[in-house]
Image 1 (cartoon, one colour):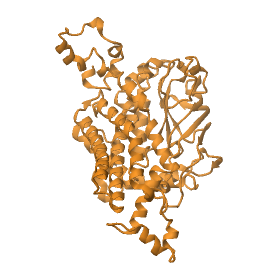
Image 2: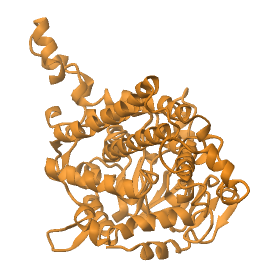
Image 3: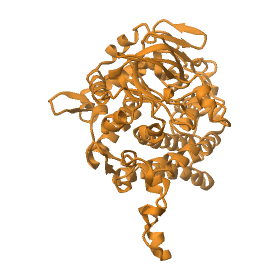
Image 4: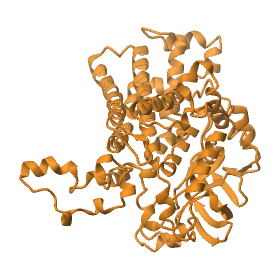
Length: 507
């Protein structure tokens, strides 16, 4: 298994990275990037801790101990074991402060390897090449090296009032083909954490009017000739671990990736040229990311509940009936998200490749529930904290002998040490009142698909068709005959290989 040191050394590979106005020489050592690089290295080192061995690793069929991120869950218990792995990583890496850790990034690869044949068979412009061998070979390469494969799917925003605008955009496209591979040029608008990856997992979200040459699913090394990463300015508070305990952990950086005549060999091309095929994967290719996102949101909700309990206990208002009622909202938020996690695991099904997959509707609507409520509850937590979330001394002020007695008196409550209240306040400030925290909230809102897309795409799943089994009870109560073949909706006419990623009942 890879160590943190091996990961950090691999970052010094000549990749071309801009952060803000500066061209970075080494992602592992530059002040704008080194904290998150170190946090990712910590991810790898966790797998070498003896006390975590049973949770974070497994022994494969060849007798090799590997990270649980490569574990194939074939039943309900296996999925729960996998969730305990993700949950443990999240708790040890700042309660989900690294939303695109390697285990989350690499989960996208499961959709390819679970049922690779359609990705090859449905490709256009490959001269009949079998792409399945490359898909399976790359997965084995990523597993053997514990690679971090960042997700680069989002295209530039276009004029959505015109279908032709998609074809005119600077989105990544194939510009030439040869016996050796393809050459691509263009842009992927957002690839979160790309500057910290080993490989860019390039894909596409279908949009009306997208031309064949923009349909590309492939693997590209982060340091490939012609690749330039352009990241926004960093929100990290480098080295400020006391004053900014969350923001000092690093900023994973949302990045635009520019491809200038980048060569991709055929054995790293997963799919090409078919908009109809791509239209089936706005969510399906991200299903595992979204399940893990729900687990992360459950952990974040637990953190919010704990912070609300701690700060109101420290300020002496926790037992007031109006405050107790407000605190109950956080408990309900956490428990509802937990119910979605447990429910989707209980109601899972086997995919074509024999992977036990959680119930898609449950984890997608769980994510929707989180997004519907998180802004309100974030504001509620800050309001409950009152001035404790806004006005508190710096560590230097606290340690100043002339100020210390006054500051201790200001922060003394019915329970806990006065200095503990500062620690709670700093976390609340970083999470909910800083650029770092605002970026985290925005990321969750647009992670893969925002709220409107969750609702829209989920209702296009075959399982939600009025012609399907979900409406059987309503038909029975209304006295309507079993649905006729000619009444089958468009949802059920979509490709069977896509429907089989949604539910066993959808086939």
